[in-house]
Each structure stands twice: as C-alpha cells, then as structure tokens.
Image (cartoon, rainbow, N blue to C red; front, side, top):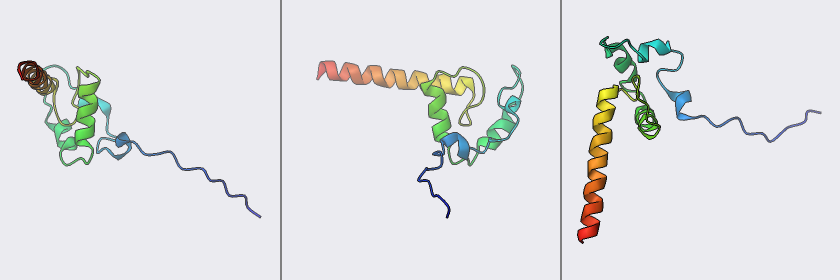
Length: 95
C-alpha cells in the first residue's frame, strides 16, 4: 500500500516561465557600449516580460536588460512615474 502525501509542488514564479531561463546571464549584462540587441530579442514575446520589468523597477535594478529594457530606458520610466506621482499629489492638494 502506497502512502499519498498531499504536498503541493512548489508554486512556479514568473522567473520559471521566462524566455531567458537557461540563457547565459552575461548576455543580459553587456559591457558598456556593447549591443543589447540579442538580449532584447530573447525578451521579445516573453510571457513574463512585464513582470520582469516591474521587478527591476521595484528593486531599483541599475544594471542589465530587464523586461526587454536597458538601464537608460528604465530610468526614463522611473522619471515619468515620479513626475506622474508628483502631479497627482499636487492635484490632490489643490482639489
């Protein structure tokens, strides 16, 4: 008689579903001035691209390609979001 345990398999995280799983991490951390094209190509069409990008933004990742975006592109997003929050706060104060 076999004993059956009711143990759920570990829940998959977004990282487990990423296109980059198993790809050399160095591809996503190119030398300064090197092309990011190959890394971004891996990200294109990835089902967890948005999750990856939000992880990088939430955690202040300053290096590498995350969610198909470079450090510079993520800085622009952070700046836009900060400006939008400031504008919303100002609107709430004057309302």
